[in-house]
Length: 188
Image 1 (cartoon, helix red, strand yellow):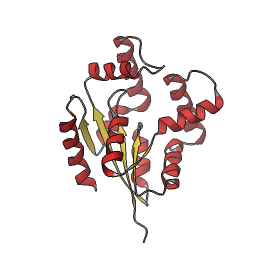
Image 2: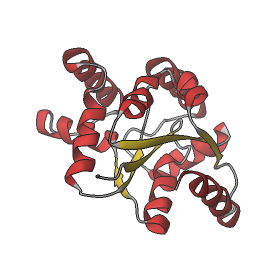
Image 3: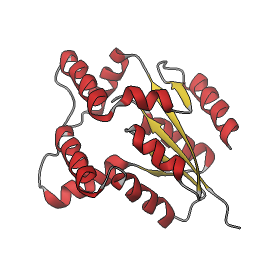
């Protein structure tokens, strides 16, 4: 009998640290990483040259979900995971409650979602440090972006149905590693 693939999803508002935490578990626990955002950006780059804004990505994701069904992007993630021939995968960018439900229904996967949180000011500073094209211009823009993210992706509900919450609001990597290890010990 084939064993189930352990899939751990990560959700957060921008700058919360979902990619950072996913990278840590990949490095420390041997997970393979998949990013729905990378899949969307890859599709966008084939369609559009030049700057790809966060709004462009959100519009494309909404369009794909409307055209192919709400699980389409997660189906692409699962397909990618299976093509990697791994028994442990991290998905950095579980957004919708439906994304969690999609993976929970999977017969050949064991899925857990971790909602990563950090104070708003710290998340804002992190997004500025990234120097990405779609970085907010001001703190007010960042706050408005949070509201949009919550409305578009229903992140409040995603947080509620997540299996674990992880505080990434301190600049203390040792404490963070302890919190990550505690969660991973429960699911592995």
